[in-house]
Length: 337
Image (cartoon, rainbow, N blue to C red):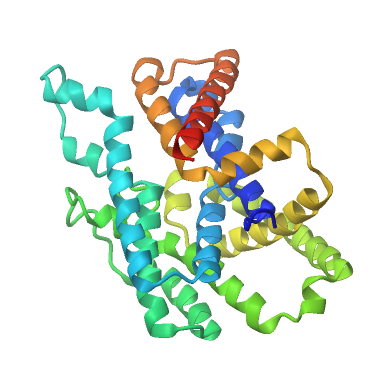
């Protein structure tokens, strides 16, 4: 811990941000043969389990760790939802201007109210505040709820065909074409992070927490399981529909990956304190600002360079956008402080 923060958590969020950056660049800017080829599939996988599941699990963990009041969590959740809507408008500013000015036609509602991980985070925070009021700290209740929640999509009938123009439902449920991160099933990762904190606090003895040998054994077993299940995880990750609307098996794969990466990241952070790890920790510390600024830049540039960049230009774009975002985040951080 440093200044009340966890270096490991910031490092994990920073690496997840870079995984997200490369995925957005490839999806927005890469030529079709690249996107449909091996590089595109590898990019989808890197931007899959290492990114959104990690963000949401860490979020759930810190909801438990910080223990804010019901009112605080609800208000913060509403702010995240509003920020997500404003981000949709900002990153599609050129498109919205073209529609309102009559230069192009289109429905502005899907643009303004598109699904986004910030909106999911806001909805999840409000949902957790309500659940904490009801379930308190009962670990088994949360474990049961994770399973029930993951099974919901097999029970609830499809809604996207019956209500194809719905604005609200894509945030919550349904295999809508552009629905990324619907509440079902993605809330399960927030629940998992919250439950992991409770389990570690109430059931794991201190000597177990600090045993280096046990961590090595657990990390090795988790790594072996990860290798065995990697083909399955890769297959789901590179399929848009399967990834964003996955079930309990892929969730289990991601949970094991997150556990292995958590142990690995703790080992890295405890042994390495370099400029690279420091950079990951810095952007992880400023995760929301980094995400918002990057998405605004990438979203508006995509209007001009969508599906046009080859391998070299993709690499140059990655460096330029990452540098520009990092500089703007540093400026924002200094202004804020």
